[in-house]
Length: 286
Image (cartoon, rainbow, N blue to C red; front, side, top):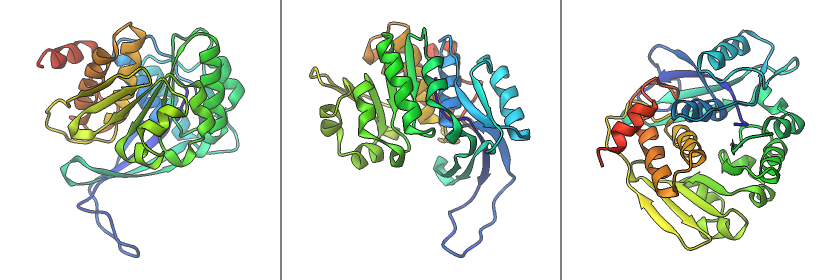
């Protein structure tokens, strides 16, 4: 896993403020996050042996996240420390009916080097990356993984960091509906290089389309959602774990959908509710 690691500062509000307006929120929660870290945790809790490559600042938040990495069983051998930039932070407004609005301050994530990323993926069966670290770093990781025979997965979020050159190194591209539209649509993305594209559709499930002609929809699992902040990250991590375990794409998408549902049932993106056993139990309810 090559990607971002942030401190998530979360507050529940009735609505987002208008320009120039202040609204009152509930108590603040400070939790580990970042798309890369969230997806690494999800992959590990879905049964995959997982290593995480990222960057934090030389500050108390970075120390907190290092402890969280170790607590999640991911290890810190591939964690870089920036002396110049603070640890990344995400400000999450949790809205009624499990919606959210997020502002990310990249911080030390911007210092993760291409060399560190390319070295980190040596020996991996699956390489998963996102776009909260520099695109050049992501491209180095995907290219090194592809050259070594790994399955490469890119979660192209946020799209404002997207570079089309990345797609030449991607086996599976994962985007949500908004991201797919912003990048020109599924067919255009397939034409640009990846072997297949998965579009997550929230409560309507997900869709997989491949250059080989596959076109599959997988429905979502019905659960009582509390916080959807990390549901997409859980989907990606569990998908990578399942594909690395030899699952077919339909099987992998079932597990990924179940992982997203389980994470949405708790506050924060890294819930203990997600496990190999809980995934199997939820998938069995189909």
